[in-house]
Image (tube, rainbow, N blue to C red; front, side, top):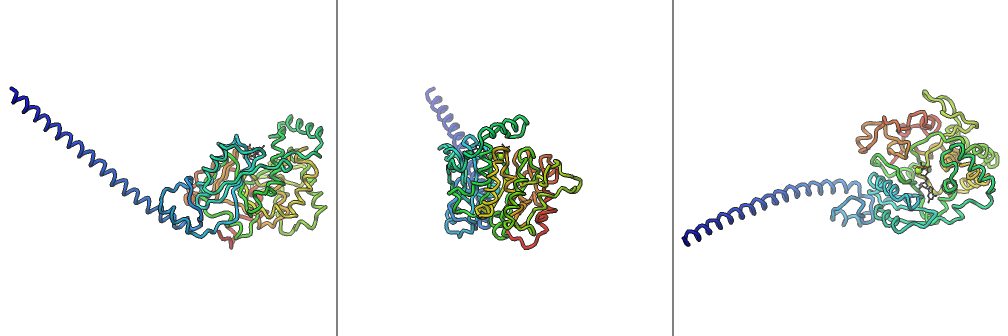
Length: 422
Ligand SMILES: Nc1nc2c(ncn2[C@@H]2O[C@H](COP(=O)(O)OP(=O)(O)OP(=O)(O)O)[C@@H](O)[C@H]2O)c(=O)[nH]1
Ligand SMILES: [Mg+2]
């Protein structure tokens, strides 16, 4: 009896050992197969990264940061030895601490679509000190260096020569009429700052170009070129993507002031090659007349300044400063609600040659409630755009848009132009 028990135990032991060895074998085989598949995939992906990076990473100097989406050590180690050909430019965001989520969203989008291949710096401006949380999160999101500056109160706050009583009365009346941001004091500081002071900030002194970025915007397509390089190579000083009509209630006396400026400084403006017609033409265009009847000769067309790429040296010039100072002296940034968009647009339309302004029609962009999306199907494929050219928010050729007026009176459609090198 004892012998039978021992034999049974031995048989059971052999059976369990067999099962155990078999399960180890099956598991081992599973892991080995997975390893083989993953290794093949990794090799494939490494090969693709190398091939692609050798083309797109020519311009880099600095080590890649986490946000570049690159994990490959070999690429990281070669990057340091590559000669830079970046422009002297920065991405620029005026922003408040509480807008951090929107700021990160815009950064992620621009990094993915453009900057991860270039690592341009980011500069952040604020009228209040940035919080540690804001600095940490935006620095982690940027592929380039980040810089933060506090705007001096003399460049931001309402000047003391503004008549307080008149200011309060006007604020109330615009607010009562339901004008967007009509009752906001800080919005007025922001518009005046963006019109006349952003380019005077010390932190921007060393740069030649800026690319304005706002929280909660989106870039729909891979950038087919470095827009800064394109601008320098082609002598462009101001670039836009969307153009539309301004609310007249916010700029009741702006055009009268501009006409006064023109009388005072005729030598500053060369009417032969500028875009005066773009901002004054009111003819039918295609099926459309201007959607708003303007009370002045200004047709209310402006470049939407939440996206703009500009030459800082133009804004720093005495001519631009004379233009801004003259406008500012009338108090319209506070007694009305002059926006930086019409102010920049009128300035570049008067002071620059038509061909110094560029419409970036391939980039795809959205800032609520409008967007722009390249019309060409193949261009959308090539640049991996995520947008619908037929969407109702796509303003390009809608009645609200001034783009057709730009094609007619400005520099024409860009693809018709010769000699533009990216
Ligand atoms: N630091 C700071 N930035 C501001 C202030 N007001 C606006 N901004 C920034 O200035 C830019 C324009 O302000 P927005 O509120 O976006 O104005 P908008 O584009 O005309 O209007 P919406 O985007 O529709 O609200 C954005 O980058 C804002 O973050 C402010 O008081 N302080
Ligand atoms: Mg905005």
